[in-house]
Length: 358
Ligand code: FNR
Image (cartoon, rainbow, N blue to C red; front, side, top):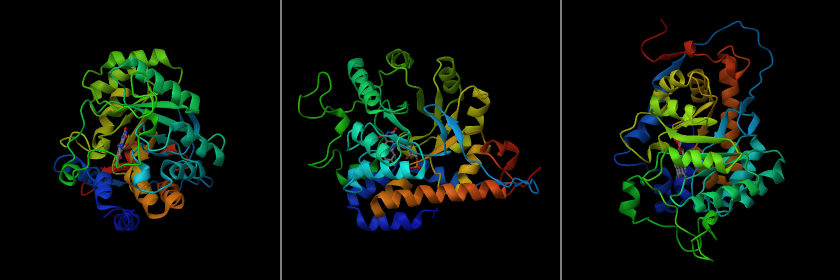
């Protein structure tokens, strides 16, 4: 079991079992889901010693977040299924902990309210908007405008979802839609949709690099692509001038046959050659996992399920506890590796367990 077993167990206790399965589950046989965490357990850190760094500085530079912690809240949908305050609680907690919140397009609170909640806690708290590009570009444009008006400082386009993943647990439970009383609030009042009700989020295999290019023309916000695993796609993304890549397999919820992002990261790091920031999510459960990811080339990492478990277990405080613990653990791991800044974590510090250093 991982670093947030207590929050997970408490969440499992309090959540409706169908909601629990929705949050916990992955696609297919959940191989990718399991491997995301297990891959971190197969890696080890070779610390450097006697480096004399008294004061540590954890800040990193990210697009739309010039002075950020290297730990972010990955976009996850439907927070009101975890806690009545939903994304408002998550936003306040992320702002208080000093982390970037990537707010899901499928949030159960509208993006302007999410950003307002974050900014009430900390005026400059960065909130990024996660976007599924829609086949109707007018709908995409309206969503982008909504995110800009709300005060989001970057867009995260999820590119690993041309179709919806096969979530066996949801199929067994008959969970297809949000229960009555909940809605994907960002999808209200969009072009071509119902005036009062929400429009469905479309996952479309039509979406291509051309749509990413159109998006870049629609906005001045930085654009990051989330869900890249193939080095050639990372290369294409750099060529198109995107502002960052999130190496991710969607927490094992899309293609179950994918490798863990942390296994792929070194190859993407090589392909990108430092041209743009690389982020990673999937299986990050300890500060030492953060350190491993940074050493292998990530500028920051995202955390998905632990945030949901914290939210279900104890609302805003539960999320803050998760984020602050990760930050404190990472700070300690950095110190134990002889580092003063995130950039001091270099590739030579990571080895495979069982194979030692040489
Ligand atoms: C997600 N994820 C996700 N990603 C995205 O781009 N848009 C979304 O709406 C969602 N929704 C979502 C719901 C739930 C319940 C989960 C667990 C995940 C994927 C998410 O951003 C991230 O890639 C993974 O959650 C990271 O893995 P861990 O930290 O959960 O292991």
